[in-house]
Image 1 (cartoon, rainbow, N blue to C red):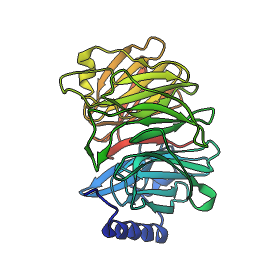
Image 2 (image 1 turned 180 degrees about the vertical axis):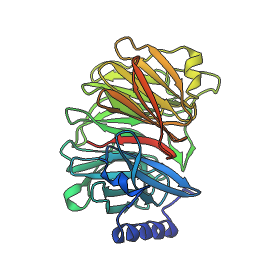
Image 3 (image 1 turned 30 degrees about the horizontal axis):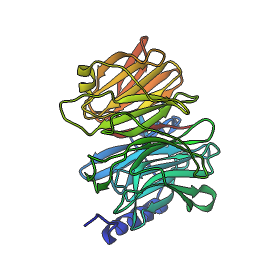
Image 4 (image 1 turned 45 degrees about the vertical axis):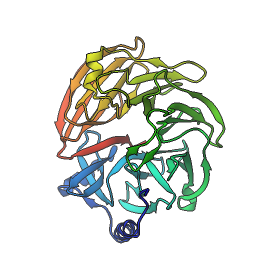
Length: 360
């Protein structure tokens, strides 16, 4: 029996929605924190079966917190001050709030025949939200399109690009890049590892398939993405093959070209424990984290070679902030780093979970 959005789940979501509508997000910590500017948003674990979205300043220090009904995953923001948190796959909700006024805007439960995969992205003008979704029973990949001005009403579904999409990002030219895992799942159980068909797919906002490429090893499930500010996409993979084999877990791609693996020694890839989570990139550097590997790596974009591999307990989110990378950790650490130049480690007191989003 496939997991469904049960009546109990719907009651939980409704209760959270009523709470959010009735009360503002409360300050996290002392009152003086409210004078700082919001800069980063991520999900967190705040207790047993208790989860929240955290708005933080540029150093990852918490400003406000908003309880969410279940464990969160990815976060997207738009220029109008909205932030949306997606439930961890198979997600039953996404929650939209205003990170400036600290008010909830909408709590959207998944339909009975759908689930969310944990990620979404706004159009450049902030008027549309694109969310990765799946059809229960088949894992057919869907990009749900939501109209912000219509209170996040769903207006379209883009499909026919593969099974199990995970992260979607918006390219500078407005195209959607989608990390398609290629895995058919029942909840979190994988059902087709021998026949999985992962890909990096590019769609227009109207659903036209612009390009689609795959890696030579079909056991590399493409999951997390970033771009370099221009045309190059970085893909982070989860390896679903033999436990004692260590394939390259990051690749680069430009539309119309071929996938290019980033380089590291097998024992260095082994540190990542078969999984790359968050990725961020500039025109010079690429940084990627591995929560199960408790590490992060830095690659030169020009050479494709690993230049630094660092331990970080439960290494989670990474974003570009100015000329630095900002990293979060499930152990509460925040790393501010300029590759090959400087590194500063802070303690935020937050058990950061999965990804960070920089407020645009």
